[in-house]
Image 1: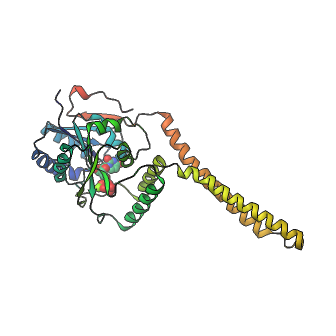
Image 2: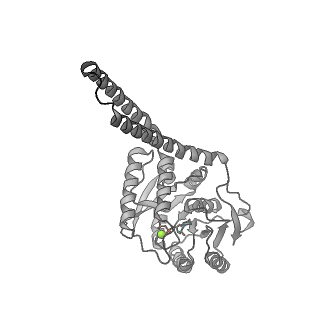
Length: 320
Ligand code: UDP
Ligand code: MG
């Protein structure tokens, strides 16, 4: 069994418009590098013609393979499904919409040859994204930076090259609420950034709407920070201290001036306030418990419906 130098992993969700131009650009960029390679497309339950196009591409090009997942599992899981299938000495992960220019791959390979094991593409700006998304992204990264237990290099995303050693490390982590960007940083290894210009999406639209991105951001924060869980102890302590002080104040007042107004507003306000605090902290607990529940169920990360262009050696791998 021949091990290629480079395995490319490309998650695909309704990218029919982009696949052919991607395949062409990819082949010419990597061919220039004097490496052997394979490309693994992961069809993440597309509902357009993506799978049919992949079928053609895999038939035309022996170095292309594809997995078709049984439904849409999300990009993070699609990437892991692809990584599970790789054989290469290094793996390059990239989007299918040509926002990650294949022409950067030779620079990745150069750095890899210099001994770097975690070579990440660093986007030069986020000008192609909507303003609101840029603002929220900024807040999210600031939160993670201050309260999380990983350091994410600025501008780094999924577009990267990982040495086999880093890939194997990554694949030991089978968590379900996946935030790959955090995991890429968590594994460490000798890392370096390679700047690249994000291109406009070639065709189609982004698969991440606001709600999906918000869920994803929450996954990221919850997987890499337990601060939201712990902060309530301090909030609770502060509020209780305030309540005791308030009690002292009212006691002293009553002793000096006797009972005045029945204190209806104070009561209503404090009941509402403390109920709010309790519900929020319960909600935070719930978020973590739901994630624990998900992990404990131990379901496979993904299910493969079909493998294209595959040889026996890699068949029958489970996605647990
Ligand atoms: N993608 C996927 N599964 C999903 C959503 C997206 O495999 O559920 C793929 C998509 O086909 C693309 C990559 O992930 O190759 C990035 O998606 P997109 O371009 O929509 O995200 P954005 O660039 O807006 O972050
Ligand atoms: Mg994109």
